[in-house]
Image (tube, rainbow, N blue to C red; front, side):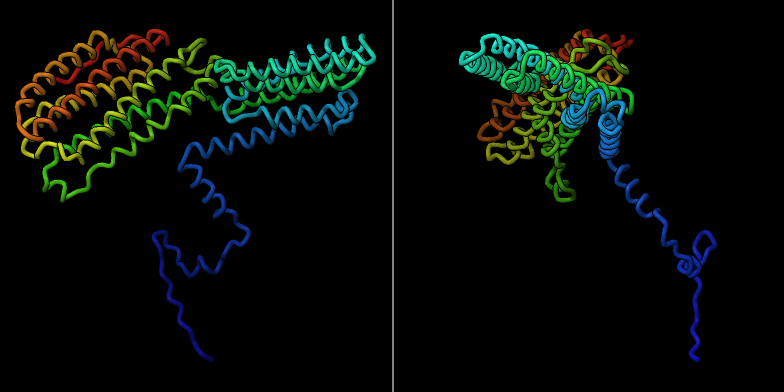
Length: 431
């Protein structure tokens, strides 16, 4: 008989690996749990997706009881399916989106159902050939009018879904060909089941781990402030690095941060629209000025555009030589440092919802810096060839950035006034 030798290697816990291998747990679900936990921990958004999916599943189970339980089914009948349909089409990821869609659906159903009942009753009263003519005219007038209304920018942003539901409900009722009493009964039962479905959506969306669009918008804006500050730091290092430093390490990749800022407009508009529907919660009270977030986001995109243009200038043939860059390094880096500090100070003001009194502290400093940059630009304009042109182009871009930063500081201060930010003792501006 051949003999075999088993080598036992103990790990840090004093348990041999051979012992671990001899007792496998076939039914253990620990690997699956570990993988799931790892994926969720990498991104908080992934956890919220799981929570939202569970909430939708719970809502569907609750409204399905209208169809499955005899006491409820005896009252609503086949119309219970409208409650299920309401949950499917109105339960959105963000609470504000659910409120927006649900209220739009309710308003569209009530208006469409009410006018449809009136149109159907009038058609029944006319009778004969005139009945078809009345129905055709009503369908054309209200369908065309509602469709035209949907194309108005203000209506399209907030009430597009409601207008679509209005058209659908109106046509379903007015063309149904039922008698007036039957039309009223149909509208009543369908509206009641839609309200039940909407109530379930709102209850779960608001009370069970609510996912607020306003929080998403707030955090997204704060992250863009930090991305802009990092982009400025990256550009400053790349512009004033010597040839030896550039060989030792790769230049900072700040353009990708700027591009992510530039692509934020559509998402901002969507989140602002949802946030306006949301009730008071957390630190955001009623009538919070969400529109200011759009203006602040626009200023951040303008600053990102200037930084990207400076990135392109680095590759331009008109850029100044390294010697001349080093001659303006100290004053320009001081300006960039002030801009970075201002961005992070404004970010902290929004994050902590405190006033920084930028009109009295930040803006005067930025104006004095702009005057100093103008003097540096005038002295550099006397240089010959491409050196003077490159330096002047760079300095004027910095001046444009300082001017845009002044506008951003004013917008943040206005946000603090309208949003009820608490007062801060003072802002210590770097010298």
